[in-house]
Every structure is written in C-alpha cells, then in structure tokens.
Image (cartoon, rainbow, N blue to C red):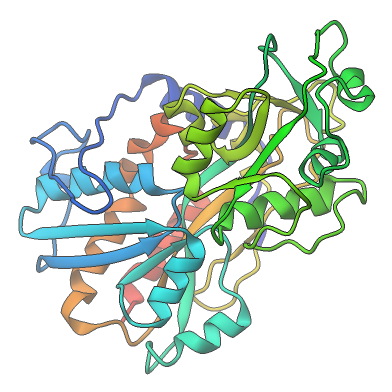
Length: 375
C-alpha cells in the first residue's frame, strides 16, 4: 500500500518543521537506569497515557532510537509510577537476538526482520511470530570534522568511494567538484563506521547500493563490509569519535549529530540543489514510503535513490519487534500500553525536537490499529 503524497508532502514538511522548531522536551534517565521525570516535564499529561498493569518492561536494540526511548520513558514513567521501562540499547542485531532468546518484551531494530529471524521468533512467540511495527522515523546524516570546512556537499557515488577507501584525501577531485570555492585540505580522510551489527549500517549501505552508482559492491548488511577505515561501537561511540578525530567522517542519526554538535553534509541527489539533513526534508521522503509487510507486519520500503525536490535520501525507520501472538502474559498489558503511547500523536510529537520525524498519520493509524490485536 502506498502512502499518498498528493498535497500531503507540504503538510508533512510544515508539520515536521513546526515540531522541530517549537517543541521543547526534557529527556530523563538512561538506557540502564530509567528515572521518571517530574510531572509535566515530559511534554504530555498523565491523563493522555493509559498505564496498564504496571511492572517491569525490558527491551533492547537500536541505538538510533535511544534518545526517543529516553523521552518516552520519562513521560510514561511520570504518568505510570508503577511501571519501570529498561531499554538496553546494544544495537539492532543485539536487540533482535535478545528478543528471539526471550530476554526482552520488545526489540528495536532499524532493519526489518529477515525471514530467518522471523522463523527463529516462532520459538518465543509460541502461537505466532515476530512482526515489525514502525515507530521511530529519522535520518542518517553524514557527519564530518574537517579542518576549515563548515559546509560540505557529497553525493552517493562519492560517499560510496570514501567509505570503501577508493577516495582517501579530502582534496580529491571528486569532492572538489561538488564543493566549488571551498578550500579542502590535502589531509587523509578518516572514515569511521560502526563496529557492532547495526540497523543504521544496514540503511546506510542500502543507500550506497541504491545511489552509489555501482561504486559500492558489497551487499547491504547490518555488519560493516567496506574496506579500511576506523570503527566505533554504537551511535554514541561513532559520534564521539568524529568529534575527537580531525578530518573524519561517519554516518549517524540526526539526533546524535544534534546532541554532539556535529556538522552534517548536504546530499546532491540529482534534484535542483543539494538537500540538507533535516527532519523536514526527511518527511518528504517518508511521504512516498510503501508498506511491503503482510498481515500485522508493517515493514516499509523506502526510496533511497529519490531525486524529488527537497527529499533527503538517507532515511531510516526503527521498528519495534513484538509477537503478533504469544507475547508474555505478564508484560502484555504494559507492552500494549507503552506502544499505544509511543505511536500516539503526543508520543510522536514529543520526539520531534530530538532529530526525529513524526510518522505520517496514515502510517501511524495502521500501527495504532495493530497494537490492540497483540496477544
């Protein structure tokens, strides 16, 4: 099913812009030690949240959504003091593995479940299987720390060559051609990638495969396969390394770029001008997303090679992986309550100023319809 764009792209962009510019939301706690926020500080009233039966809810996975989870934990914890939500992060690969081992009630992954992972989930979801529910929309920004360079334009083929060690210096002719008038140093490029299995890596390498002009010959994967470069664990580690290492470049979610005051490159897509890494521009891409999952699974297909005006191409969706049937009875009620909040208008708007993109209402309504059916 295609999310209709007619007349809605501008509305999505305007809505995202308003959210990014006007919402002010304090996130409290950490992945391993959730701390409820004082009443009202999480940007939503207690009356807007149905708490469920309470208890402890364990989850892990994507670090791309960690900042969003922090916001949601604060709001939910403030309204529902009898519930403790612990999100362990660890990366998408870890989250899916722990879900299929029955260690967590849900997992966050930036890459939809593979058929083998769905099959493995049936051992935990004894009467059903794992499904993907899109919950956090965002974008992957190409962050850089280059001496004397404040604005940088790159395109798919050039990015692919940089991250596969085919372009190794900043003043390479291919980079210079995209940045007329910019003084680029002759320094070696320090390309940094994720060391852990990562859905962010999967989305980034899918972009390189689709938009790299044949210069990325590796299959898209959570596991990094490029040649050379340095590595760092998780989104926080990658962000910290770019901040510390001169003449470095990496890929990280916009939320982490903003938190760490990192500069993001603009992407030349074939549109009339390069596209900046903003939530507004990502919203334009999400307006054309297609649902390709079946049944209760809402896996999306995204156009990484888009040339639409103002459409940022390197986007990602974090899915919450749950059982369609066979969820643990002790946590099912609380799981449904928490997910109902996160996909609500209040929940989606709450993460708008953290570098995320509220899901289009057409898609959010489909997620909202699935959650009550979880058993």
